[in-house]
Image 1 (cartoon, rainbow, N blue to C red):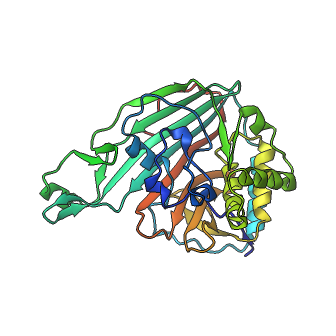
Image 2: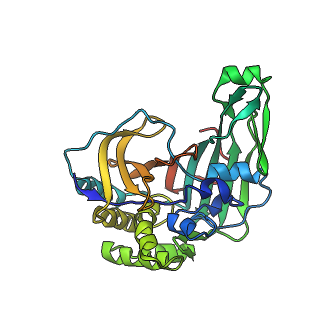
Length: 338
């Protein structure tokens, strides 16, 4: 099977340490973390009234999927062929009035709660939605889901608490309020080291070679060391598959550019944390460490199903499941449970 390359993002270290203030602040380029800069999102905008910033940020960052039982089998097709097939589907993506991304973030930190030997880890989840209209208006939606003790017996022996303090926030077994907040500044998007307007996103080149050069330019705006730039290329291309409101032709070009990279592996037989079938697109996150980034992609629709970071020792586990990503005519609304 051919090797391609989305190497990925996000300083696994800063997954816990650098806590962005809002869901439009999530970084997608691991190189920026390694340059000791604050992680930010491809959606960059101010959101007011968000409580428990640390707990929120823990969900905003992505990381290893919670399912470890599926081991993808290598496909008889080349990874190059699979990504080109996805590129063909991407060119037929629907259009609409709003760019909409809906994600379920789940985190299981390694930190133990409880006392007197009755200790257990917690799982915390939340829904985050992002909307940007074709004229540049933006909204963010948030819904905190109930925290869940992973060892129920130890939790009951600990007195079955319903709230836990964490740095700058709390976890709770109660479901949070569903909120939709307008973003006064409108939608801005991060492409590696650059902040782009919606118009600039729409102007990205649709030829694979030109898109690759444009992405490299954006990465160099944040870092200049060659290894950091190389590490940032596949993940930045991957962000164009579902995070930024690029045209179908640009999304197809991003798939084709990924197919030409030498360090990505593509495997069949994978499933996302919800059991949805797809192919795994895997790449090194840090060239000198075993940590890997892993996208699950449905090549029949070109949709990214989930993102994970694997082999990140001591960092707990985190999953980002993509529930929706694309243009829609549906009006912005507060997140629902699904």
